[in-house]
Image 1: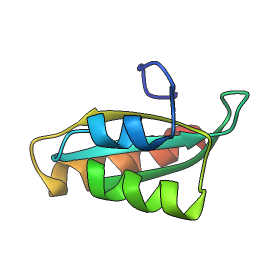
Image 2: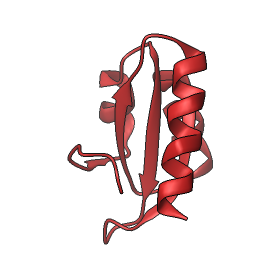
Image 3: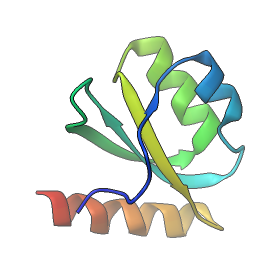
Length: 81
């Protein structure tokens, strides 16, 4: 099951608006298909994804800790697989 958040274009404006907090994110293509799931400090992770062209779109959810982000990302990957 994908994150229940709207897709945003993965661009500089979106990266700048991303929180500087831990979380889980999905990268997707133009059609909205999930390409990858990651976790970490969201703004830092999205800067890297944008720089490497890892996706066209993104959506995320924040967590309180990196450990919780890691757990949620693992659970999320299991549900999508």
